Amino acid sequence: MLISSLGQGLLWAPLAIGVFITFRILDIPDLTTEGSFPFGAAIAVSLMLKGQSAIVASLAGFIAGCLAGLITGILDTKLRIPSLLAGILTMTGLYSINMHIMGKSNVPLLNEKVLTEYLPASWNLDIQTIVLGLIVTGIVFTLLYLMFKTRLGLSLMATGNNKDMSAANGINTDGMIIFGYMISNGFIALSGALIAQSNGYADIGMGIGTIVIGLASVLVGEIFLRGHNILTRLLAMVVGAVVYRLLLTIAMGLGFPPDDLKILSAIILVIVICVPIIQNRIRTKRQLKKYLEQVEDKDDESITSEAPAKSILSRD
Image 1: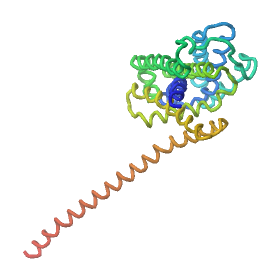
Image 2 (image 1 turned 30 degrees about the vertical axis):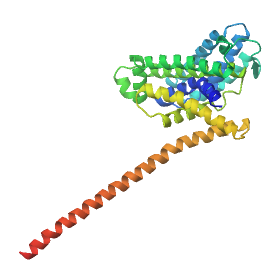
Image 3 (image 1 turned 90 degrees about the vertical axis):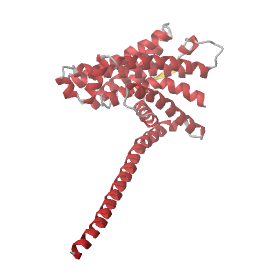
Image 4 (image 1 turned 120 degrees about the horizontal axis):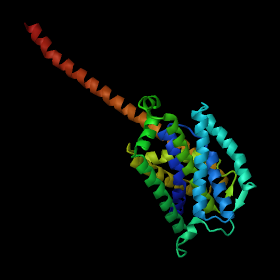
């Protein structure tokens, strides 16, 4: 169970990283996720059925996701449509596009060679999935880490922290927001392509709830790994994706039917949102109680120090 969760979590890690870029770096709630995830899967599966290799098909899925992010970015920055609505519009349009690409609601992979089959055949499927996940996630992780060390990456983070100040310092904030949308949805679509190959099919409804999965992975990762440097934050996304899949696997092992996975995802998200809030409230109450105790101690000390002085004055 642990090995299977680790492999699946690593395949979902690019999704968590993509959601992290828009949700944490740019502070944008991007619902394009639910359209770009199946978009990447539809592109990858369709190309593989037409004879393209799984590597080329997966890269095409990534590029398709970038194009989806580009559309949302243009709607947001150039047409001044609110980011939430821009994501919904793109997501809605992608539904029809995905149907045209696949031709039907569900397209299975028959005898096509998926990415795990490039690995040694002597390894079992779980080991192949883990190794594939480590390779893909490692490449995504490394590229993003190096990018955030460059002027481009720093400009992206600065835009998310303070858009007005970044623009005043000469940063093309609209361009940075569009770029963030593109790489975010590119990684999300790449994850969709990987999951489609792992499942053996692409389905029009496989994007439903992916934003919840991504947000839950982000928040779970931030609970387990706290830090302000980009290395720790990216690593937290990978850990969050793995832990989240492990929680779902445990729930399935307890007898929950597969149809309840979506509501379980929502429950997990509510828990990981509420836990830090409750912890902060408890910490604040403890700090306030400690402060009041210190104030009372100081008052007691001042009273005792004033008593001898009064006795001396009365004696005089």
